[in-house]
Length: 129
Image (cartoon, rainbow, N blue to C red):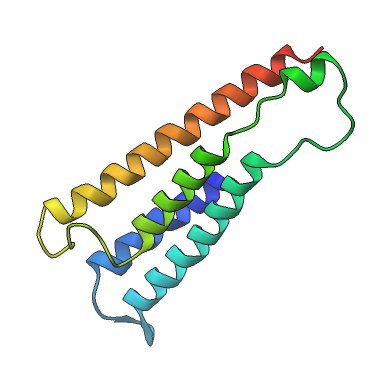
């Protein structure tokens, strides 16, 4: 769910920010913004699932080996998604290239953090007997 959300956010950003006009009677900017919004919802839902508990009963060493993402990191990831999708930025996008760089930096950090969390989870899953 997280990776699909990331793809939709990036795929929606291109027409929302770079293309102007209509395509088959549909405003491309509005369609891109809608795709970004759907991607953001999927991405936030996937990030919130990182904090969730594993289904089924775990006991003893299996419960200790299971890795859970900290609340602070989950909150930071959700804030990064909102910042990327939000039209309100610290540096407005009209000040090229600096306006785009702050969003790209937030996206890069988010990708790094998600990759780190999945690596940690896969290592914890391999340790479970």
